[in-house]
Image (cartoon, rainbow, N blue to C red; front, top):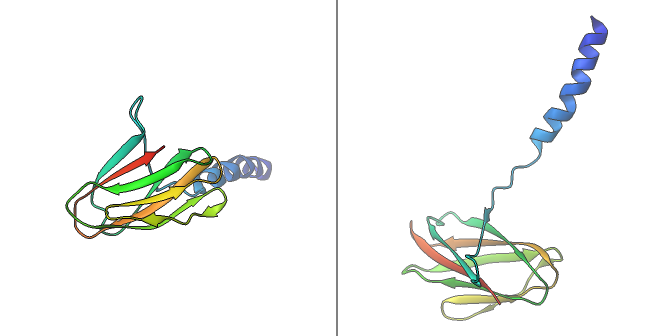
Length: 119
């Protein structure tokens, strides 16, 4: 009986460890076929993290296409945080390495419209 419990524990522990891994709470940005841009519309007043797979030396543009105001808190890539240039309704970043890039964006109302473009 003791051996049966031991075997059950050895089987269960890896399954529990696998399911405990942090769930990715970011929203994946996708582009339509033959498009350079993807978008999101919804509530980001408490902030929302987005992710996008990009290649090196791409120009990532996060653009406000709604009526409210948005703030890009950060963009980070595989090498760390990127420095951006802010213009009127958009912020632009140049990627350094290929891989997933994460962006945290805040809005000032319960409904925001954002466009993510990579050139």
